[in-house]
Image 1 (cartoon, rainbow, N blue to C red):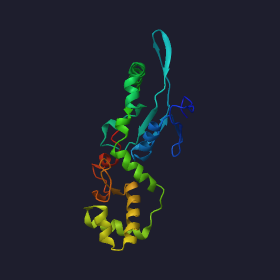
Image 2 (image 1 turned 135 degrees about the vertical axis):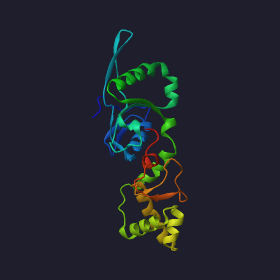
Image 3 (image 1 turned 120 degrees about the vertical axis):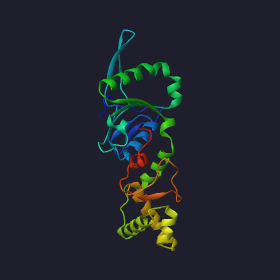
Image 4 (image 1 turned 180 degrees about the vertical axis):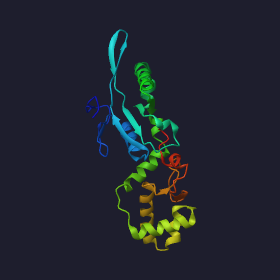
Length: 229
């Protein structure tokens, strides 16, 4: 539970992110949580995780960052993920317009992060709303789908034989029947969503994307993890 209760308001979308149970107070925070939920190297994240008290102009003030993100220990190819990330989520226009008000809070966030061996960052919509997010929004619809063994095994076998290919080439190599091709494609997206089949999620995902079987290569984290983090 966060240290601050989020109340509904007329200015922005508020609610609870279902999979994580974390509250959000803007649609941008909700999208950030979608990214965090999908990223396989994120261990957990907490909304409104802590309260930082400080003095400004002789007055006691407090600041509650939006998110604290913890990473799994098995993400060695992103050294910056060795430390938790404390962050503020802001629309860039609001950040620029209200910079004078936000700056003291950012300063305190940076100070607190340094003292506790965290990182601190202000993450804006410019960073969040990218190609990776679009791919995640497409793939997450397959997250809870049950794999079909009679489709899964031929896909894996053919993909390993081809090494690198595209969804179009792969499913056409398996069948000329359009109905069966559609079933194979659906199964393939499930496999991409579960990272059994890899592709670069930082470029637009489509049936001509380069795909290959997950063999745990050194470039894995860069391919499938959010560049925001």
